[in-house]
Length: 350
Ligand code: GLU
Image (cartoon, rainbow, N blue to C red; front, side):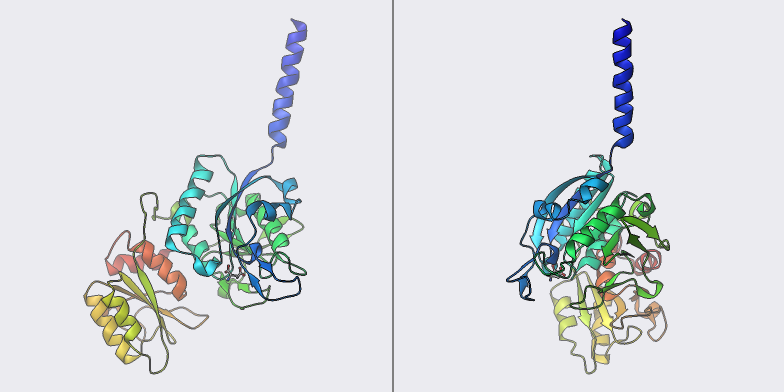
């Protein structure tokens, strides 16, 4: 009897020991991009994105196994120029299941850099968990000299296991920096140091495998977002029209004729239209196609009722969102309402 009691105590101690030492459970979801790209030679800039699979990415950075209990899955393997609504919906739904039903502690998504900011912002509005969700990519293909993918993946896992990265919304991890989904923007076509965090700068950084946060986002996201993709199998159609001197109204007309639900203007300056485009925009808004004014300027807000009388025309001002992120928010907003004032409120909150 004494012997059995002793064995039971040892077993209990072992269980407690194992659970105390248990590493966080992190799932890596691979979607492609340059991080999974292969170039013709290690010194060549000619390459194809989305070539190698998730296991190859994990095998390239065995150090992540010291940080977490790692498993991976391949959602798609594409260059992120081919990212679309269908993949976004699949990704958001999958993350919600992994975090809320399958006991994962955090998610890392490998992704091309071209549209990483849009995916990050879409997930920021649709993931229903405060656990870390971190996107990582690379600017050099997997077999390049000094490939940046492995370090970015290691840092992303370090962020995903960090309590400091809980409750701050979706993050991008590139070049040792942490950037928040709302402000992150790709600024350079080929440099490794391409991502910036807008006027407020980066949200944190990774040093020696540890996340250090510098600020907290003050917009609504994740668990505080009203947007729910659970029952959605498609998103409203929203296009972007680019503004320039002597701008043709044809692209705006084409979206109207094709029955799009909303149009974002990448306007000049403070979201201004060329006069011919303005007339088409007023007609579109009167037909119930929501117009959102954003700007082609890389910095600064698009202000409400400033040079354009938004209240008169029922246009919405994108405020701090660039055109590609304004499009993401407008698509989700249109799943909830077609009231321009309600949509403007979303742009103030998210
Ligand atoms: N165009 C590719 C993509 O976005 C490569 C860019 C990158 O990943 O850096 O997937």
